[in-house]
Image (cartoon, rainbow, N blue to C red; front, top):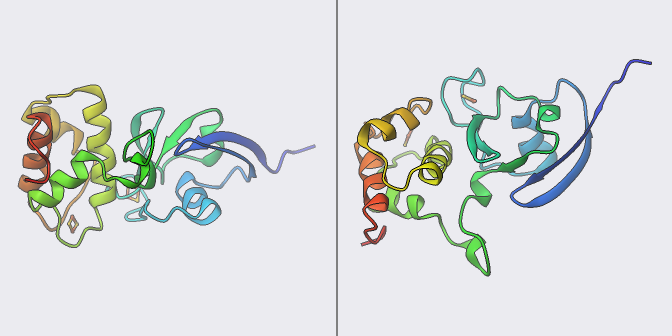
Length: 166
Ligand code: FES
Ligand code: FES
């Protein structure tokens, strides 16, 4: 018998998820439509803009290029879950979110969830990334508004341990 759906068992923002998914269900659509987390943005839908970035086992990935069934057993974090951990931390912005606001690193904001995910992934790997590492981390994120300088300053602000809001 041909299997028409896969069993998917994973976590999204720390919550265990158990569903059956068709083999053609993209992770982007699964997260937005089945789970209802719409901070993950559709953009180009072919892996070029980074608006749909999520962390998969801590690594930034394009949700438009992954099938939901490929996430069996994996830990997914979306922009809704990227903040802190522990008591009441989930409601707090991630330091990079506060720093992006402080440095004027957003305008229309459509790219911002994907950029925050890419930079949160970078800062998990490296607490004080070089400008080259920041540019590399942002290489999959298109921003048509800001020119990127405010975003780069925001990473430097966080990695210099400055107050991201001052
Ligand atoms: S929507 Fe996924 S990279 Fe553009
Ligand atoms: S702030 Fe508008 S696309 Fe980046």
